[in-house]
Length: 452
Image (cartoon, rainbow, N blue to C red):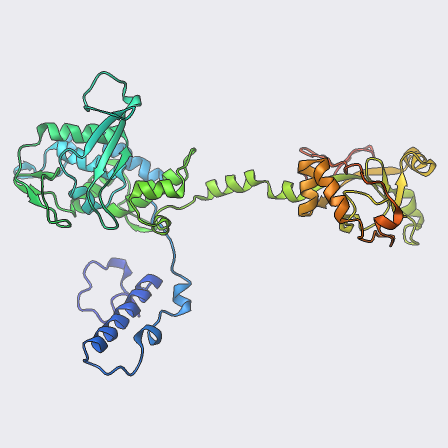
């Protein structure tokens, strides 16, 4: 199906007419069909010849495309809308032949409530008189109190029973509280209204001339007015800027802040019953994800560098091809000539096998005295046990030695057969930051596998 197929009214579809249905719409169509046949069977209009729940289940190809996709407004656009709302003037309000339909204080209070509260449009329309409370150190105070500074007060918004839960209170910016207090100061007395969700008779905050403000007022009037003042289009790549997209935008900004809210804190602030619902509003930005990945230090955690000497004479003469050692890995207390050193399980605690050459020996001293050597750095990936030994020190190293007692060395014998001491020296790992390739001297260190 495509948008507009099998429908009589296509007004309002705009440029979406004729485009393929989205996955969520396909799932909704199948769900409606499944519900129809289920009800027909329950009402005994049709015999139970098949199971709608199984036969009309949503295909996996569609469910794979369903998931959280918050319709976040771009930061630069949202910042301009905030500026427009904070600087709202009487000249910005829509004008009719009789003048302004709503007073500026009411329009400003509705606008800032939408920009700062993160509530649904119907919840904003159902706010009640006295929904703003001010507290200082847990004690209630009046909004116009001069006894404490504004930065020391907490502005609380009382949200009525809503779509997913009961009434609750949440902290909001004092700018919102000041705008609501300014409207309540000039709000004329209004009759009580029936709350459409609870059935109670309540004093609605946004009401005038014995009529409540429509739930569509934000989409039809407030948002177009702010877009005109801010000089931004009323739609972006994600679609039209609507009242509900502000909820996703505010939630995502709180989730990606310098001191971000946790998912459970954000769940309480939005009034959700389950954190799964919150995931449909909060979205990690690529910058936040990149910073978290960088700080996790994945590469540095799993790779360390060790110095290695390259005997260029052995390579040039062909002795290396005949099996003579040409690589000497620095173990701190000696040298290892095992070519596949990064695969050796004993590299963190050398078992002194046939590939080992002590630095104090004559062979080790002759090696260090040779002139045609090139000093390099090799990246060595670490196992979990070796990483613990590096981070935690000698105690973890002793445990590693104990586990490797009966593991064969590259030369064949196990450490138990070689009779090594119970302790060993930790492998000298090098922390690298800025490594340059050699220019003239062959002794300058460099790495070919990246630095850490």
